[in-house]
Image (cartoon, rainbow, N blue to C red):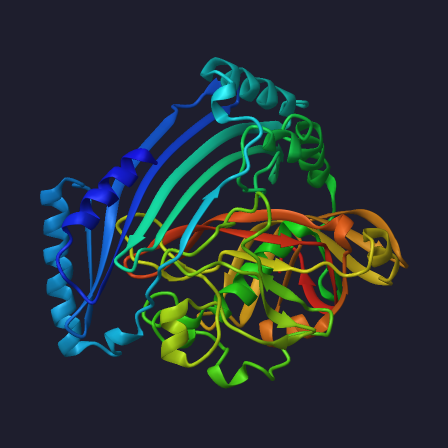
Length: 480
């Protein structure tokens, strides 16, 4: 961070006059290691360093990005931003006076108990080989894959109003995959942290069960080969946290993005069935539905002290007791819409401006244990781990497929079913919510590749959820 602070100090001392400016400096390092079928895959190393300059001047807003952090490079970025600000002043859809100003001074760093560098490259590869070998328990396992990854982001935001927000995000990811085949039937199971993205160091491997999960992953892939297809019809549906994170992401997170509601995403990522007049009164779900924006959960993927515009990040309810309260919108969108929002203006990299994004979007725990939820089902299906998804461009009608299903009959778990899927309409689905797991069932997970924006921004999003029970959902198998 010292290097970024030096650049920011030099820029602040020489910046030209403007109504307001912000400089966001970002350094990112990535590493990916993998072993497939006992063979070490080529490793991938990435490094990126650059700056985004935002300028408010003469009634317009402009952006200028550069990887040249010398005084000349930043001066050129300023000139480009000034040119765009001039155009915006003439052609913009809203006034530059709505752009948020920040004087916040804050620091954030990921909680890390065991740094990535604790293990040597050889030790990491040995760990991956052991995990990959542990998946190969039967000749019918035709593909085995184990991976580890690290993403380290150092970011510094400084503003002309004296704001200075430093952010250090350290993330370790992992995963296991086993593919089983018998004749024309092929089944895949993943685990070992594959959908447990989070901040932290190598201690996360134990938290997500990387070493211990191989036996379960391979055994379930084999068992699914002989399992019957998921039955079709209307049944109760019990979704495990591994699937709930994507259900929340697609049918709550994206519809509540305020720029999407305002129409900004219409050409690329679609609109939303949610309209501005719904906030404060719309029944989004049953009274058991409580959804928060919570940037303070330790280790969750998008935990932070502030967003990328320098707005302090605070926990807020988006949906409380089923009623829609506020959207996912940063201060600029809030000013445009006249609605409250959250600190959710985020950028994927130094060469992208902040836009309204999900951050940590969580379903709050209820009162039921997993056993209680199962006991309340007379005829239903439990589904675990997302495999496929489809949702319309207003984020309303959806269809999801999962890796594994289990029948529930008269309050008891029965046998496996393969290729389970379900479909519904967001506006109705959440109103069928009939049970939410308690705090002991909550799992903090995340999504690594949420795409949005023109040009595209792929960003990481945190989601926490317990298992949840829904009544009378249309379920189907692979043949449907």
